[in-house]
Image (cartoon, rainbow, N blue to C red; front, side, top):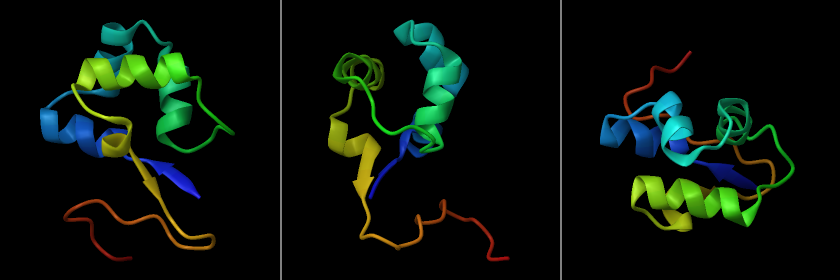
Length: 80
C-alpha cells in the first residue's frame, strides 16, 4: 500500500497544505484527500506540481507499506 508523506515534508519546510494549494494551483480538497490517502490514485501532473513546489522527488512524499501494515506515526506523536 502506498501512503503519502506530504504533511511531514510540509512540516519540515515550515509550509502548510494551504500554501501548497496556492503554490501548485491544485485544489486544496484534492491535496487534502491525497494527503489523507483517501484517493485511489493521483494524476502524474499533480504529483509533478507537488514535487516542483516542494523541491523534492516522488519518493520523498510517498512511502510503500506492506499490506496490512499501520501507517508510521508522526515524529513525536504520543501513543494512545
